[in-house]
Image 1 (cartoon, helix red, strand yellow):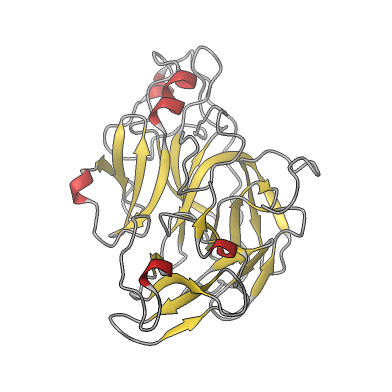
Image 2 (spheres, one colour):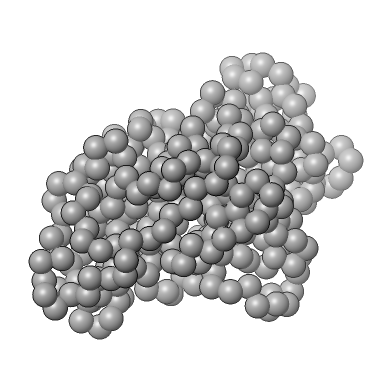
Length: 330
């Protein structure tokens, strides 16, 4: 599991042991561990009851969040927090906002209230009503069209001899709640490994979707998983697509903007560049979208000077303090 780093949010549960599995796990493609053949390994609980929620929410544009409210491209706002709590890592998929626990906002003293487990998976519908799924997750990402959610389940898998569950990559079709992929490929073997020691050092993480596959840092290295077929394969780092959304993006400053005060954050699926420019009304910055290659730029209404959060798996820096013209939040 990833430790703290300045470019991506890490919750206070970083030391929590990871895991994934549900019942007899033979989804997950070539090279699986086959651990369910071990009579001494726990079979884990019944299959996860994945939610499905209403009409699909808009994802064809910039999605961002601040102060517990997720802003969608069509102007819809989904309130999933308040002044004292906001979501952890989140994605929008199907008819809901999938998010990883709650965290204290940057301007609120830590420990102001009990926010519950930082890794607990929730899904909120369009009204903001959130349901806890009943598992913990390490990280998550959504496909660009909002069809799939990929995650690493922390709590459901067969346990090693020390009681630490096995981690698996899971992909869910968000609209139907159907689990289309579950794989422990690359996640070690509970029959022989000390998983509690293995996972923190390995920094396992769902990176995101690119070229129709899920890219995951597993305990044994980079792997890719295909939601359509359930197969997995070793991933080559030099084969990561240049436009993979979790990579840092470059981009010249828009006309009239000081290059020293311009910061590119991410690139949307249609090529639109998302960045930060100085806000004339505050001492900080404002989110801006720019058409590529040299089209017009437009500020994102309501974002100026705030701590904004981009969806997990869509940017190298997912949490940005616009009070400081786009400083990452460590």
